[in-house]
Length: 490
Image (cartoon, rainbow, N blue to C red; front, side, top):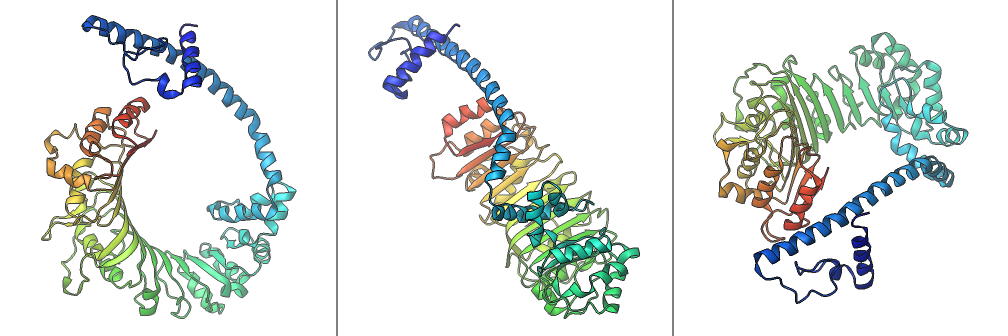
């Protein structure tokens, strides 16, 4: 095979003298030459012929290596496929029961809302799995609305004395469901209220002692007594905000609201969020604010912008929302989150990042780490410059997940100036994920602007994740020029 002798000689040279000697700095030294340290061809023709010979020799070696890699990869895939069942069986046999129980506990919450409960499925795999599952009480702590009376009692028995997660049924089965659970309300850790009748039957059955309750999901206003919900720290509300009760609101640390234009409570969002004194994690999912306009509020009593630190703020905006902006900014401007996660599914998503109607063009995503996801077309580089330029240098990490974003070379009317690039270089980390319209010239342009300076100055890392038009060879070439600050996963 052509090139095989050259490759064997090269590998022999690597074995005897090391990689540096096998790939010398002297561009005129070929693999087959013994000593060319003082060899310098004269004239353009001589230099060109030497380079062409070295290129052909290198390509021949690469062809042999590629063929060897192809055959070895095929053999490796086959060996892995054949050995996989044996590896799994051997691993299971070696795994102690107590470690297996820990694995079961770590995955039990993935059961979802289907009829096949995770714990039941595990107990049907094998005798050993059944034995371990029955001896692991945590697997049996979720009581779902589609369980029959006997199954509920069996789950309660197997759960020992652990806290319970209660998923209530629809109206027709609430009373019988709660009757079976009557003596367990003191163990409830989480509760889903999907019907307005649920709280009525709970009071009728005397189920008002909920000392362990920490999480409530509700589709109807919470009307339980304050003593029943005093320990609740997490709520998920669909169409409703939390009740205005001092101690209850002050205990909330994790809050998630699903709201739309049809929900009458939406205009009270700002007042509600301002009252959550110990908030650490806030998630808002807003949909279909097609044309709502709200009366301008009296902002005199509002908290100072960016004065309340929290861990995470996640906002999803679905549908065209010309009426949402002022309401949303009033509700969120007091927060200073460590991480902002923003999903916008609307045309011109970058227009929703600023409140243009108030003095100073207040920026909505404000915090050290910003993650922006949108399926719509967006000018990511201009958006990035705006994010950094309007945030008093607080932004240090930005992630874009933008499949329809065009690269900087496409947005010719929005070219960034040197000051914009200087701001972007002040970041610590920058990630482009699923930017499927980015071309290799786009990435090269960005890299030239951001990573040409010495390591330690400016941007510490730029990641390219699953961008379909970017090849591994291209990124390897860029990496040779800029070093390990360029990272990628294709």
